[in-house]
Image (cartoon, rainbow, N blue to C red; front, side, top):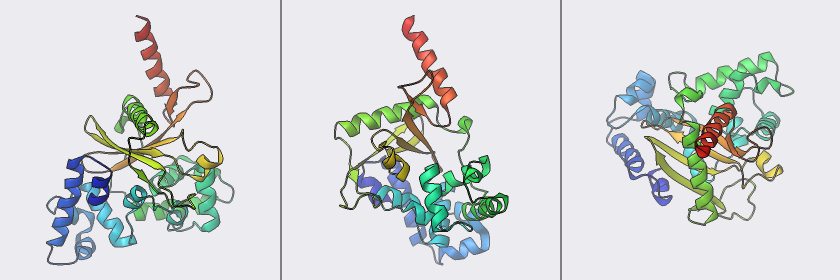
Length: 273
């Protein structure tokens, strides 16, 4: 992860955090899985240089043999295969969830499973929905704080500013590019990726590479912004060009359209003074 972030010109302090975490694991006398088995994630957090986010990453690698965040930064994340690791989700349902809901992470699936969006799909009744929620709870670990709510996430002003920086830099050809595995038969490095920082948050931004974005020809419009706090805990939002309402033609954060409307109204008022 540290090597990948270094190649993509990420924040040096973020890179050093992964280097320190790796050094801590290399210096252990026993397999880290023994600590997990005996003391859970809390035992990892007590280790030098291992915070809540790194502990969650270590647990993911130990239990599932993969590091989804690293796969994403390398362009190697197979969203449908990832969704199939959840009990109750087979190949057909994974494809449906990814294409119809635009979901490509377990965290986004968890949010949809709890807000009712998942059960809107055909074939998912209360019983299967409960199975998926239970499986996600076990896989993700409820002790790990996440950032699904607007009040605990970066402001829309920050997210829109990251979106602006990303699209400007991508348009000018100033960003490193990765070769996503999906929808890229020529293995072309076409997807620009940005790492930047604002107000104590680390951000990673890249155009959406979901099946839905390709089908609607939005791969140069929809921007997925991942955000991380000092413990490397991850959240995400998608920024798009609004196609209706008062904010039509403006960039809005999906799920936070009301806040974006207030943000633009305040800017318009300030502009007229």
